[in-house]
Length: 128
Length: 146
Image (cartoon, rainbow over all chains, first blue to last red):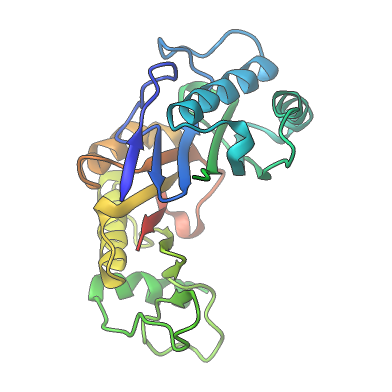
């Protein structure tokens, strides 16, 4: 049984997809872009964009009754590997309270939608 | 490599009958074998793998060209055939990754993508990558419930 998850605090899906889908104990979160609720890229640079993406993901996690401590696997797409140090730093700060850092991959890509510098997708495990 | 890939891609369209059940009933993982003759080398990957109640469908492309709409339709048809082959369906998809060779194809891809997964579509991530093997315009991978 797959259950769609929607958070009004995160940007609405820009295409035919759900913000997240729960299947059993697993929660599959769509890639989040650094968009505000009006669909605009947040001002600033890669650090601000990283924080916005993680905040959006956190809203979706909350809508499913989970939080960042439930993350098990995270895939980070960046528009250029030169962003890695800044992304890693912002990510570490955001997840500072997480006892076990999720498995992670960082993938440089040629382009992201809306010209974003970063997109993050994740899988979380919800116990109980 | 090209032949292997072609065989795997062709398998879905041909809906070749194969035993999806694992040989070892205690195994939680089963590989969807297309049963086609190979060049004698070990296969690179399975079109789909079932594990712990989930089906993982390999990234699928259309290697003989076509418009982005044609390629997207072919890829989704192929994925649908693979899912059905192991007893799953598009409606059971929970996660979808879409790789585009050019972000300009985001809109046209969406036109063909819309509605293919039922009323409750899976979570999805779309990125443009530097290149997709064989010059494909789009490659899609899916995780579904078995």
